[in-house]
Length: 413
Image (cartoon, rainbow, N blue to C red; front, side):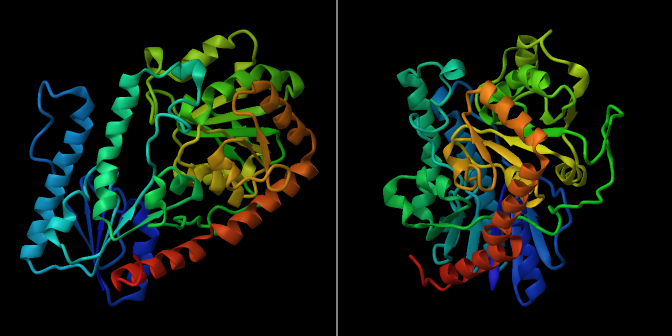
């Protein structure tokens, strides 16, 4: 088949699919993206990079700036796609991530090529992440709701243009309007269980501050892309004083960028870490709390093999891969009792669930797992079994490839 993949940071979520198709041979594989390649591509995959020809319009209404940004990106992608068409390339299937606008006009270039889009999340002012945390988000005014509504303009256009859609989790599918859910398959990208796996003989890990972490220590891990409320940084940091009272030997390792946000509003002064550490100042021992910044992937997986307890908290939002990688590594997990986590963690069976807003409940749950290593190990084994059964790379990639065949043959829709 001739397959076009479009992702602003190509290969993005298509990484494993590309490897599988390249290994099969016999396909013409082309990728398009706006960012430079950050990793080598499989042999035979051609990459086309495009760039916007202009920036945003000065003085544009705030509510449509994001829409214009996506139109600009879509236009740039379409220009590059048109050049491909002029060179004779007509895809049998287009796989595109529409989140940044790139896919907006692909059907205008190739109206007869089936389009399979990767849908991540549909925004709602009520009932999901936007009004979840009253302390930090307050009462939403109608203008905030109107601004959020505009974020869905691109998504609705992409849904209308798509022949079919795919999303990683049932929770993510549930965020979309009911009328579109029947046209969205739920298939996860997959977890490499041969990389994210337990290792009873794992070597110590040396952190950037010189601290050496060894298996058998009471290590508690918490991972965010950026340390921010959307991923529960405030509940976790507020739990530290009580956790240290219950287990003074606990070694807390926090992974993630310490400035800025990926989701939600920025912190006063630029760092949510600083905001919440200032709140607990004098009530915890900072010498036993380690902020690593971003770890490379190998060190991140190494850390998951060492941890005694991994904590994952999130608003009702897109589930992080880090949770599933921790589970695959047999890490005992404590998660927030929020919809995306409840899809994969069943309380007391393959992990523990706590109230997102209860630092007390979280501290007690962590301390209990640290004090009961046999129970923690049991939960860890069950967590890995969940990943092997439902989220392994081999299973998920095969399901993705089967869906692509159906869409390209127009056998679904």
